[in-house]
Length: 187
Image (cartoon, rainbow, N blue to C red; front, side, top):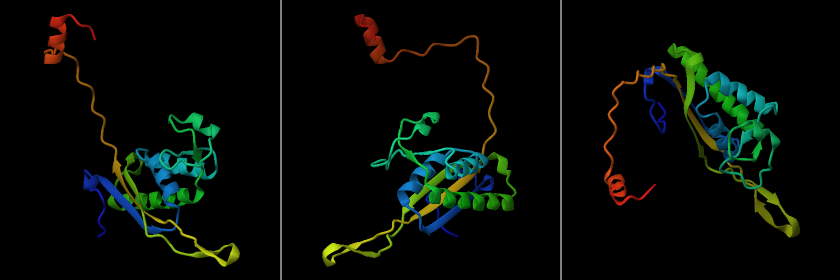
């Protein structure tokens, strides 16, 4: 069995999928994975399909240098104003989500409750090629593949909020607050 960077909290209620040495840009894939983390499985698949069709956009948060600003980002609640539609990254992540979904079905999990709880993208070893330049020179022409791993867990049942007691005891003020109260200083 392949070792993952993190173990699932409840192994019987989770499923995993991973891909190694995938020939897709690391930076684009990292941003795409960051965008779907925490989403339900069906929503994540729909979101990636919409990105491929350019109906929704991936916000670029970390690797944003040289990425243009897009008006579609106004619909998302993110601070980033730059984004792209990385088609190939979305296709690779969609295939991994489909693989994880089939793993969940084999385990007997409810696929409607699955949530992307962990997703990680790591750099793989660069592919080396060469390109010819002017005046007889040769430069490197590298590819930047990546490893992707994800863990999907069933969403836990929501716990009802406890009823508030009528007699709430106020917390004892801390030393700093007591000192302020004695001196008469305000916050």
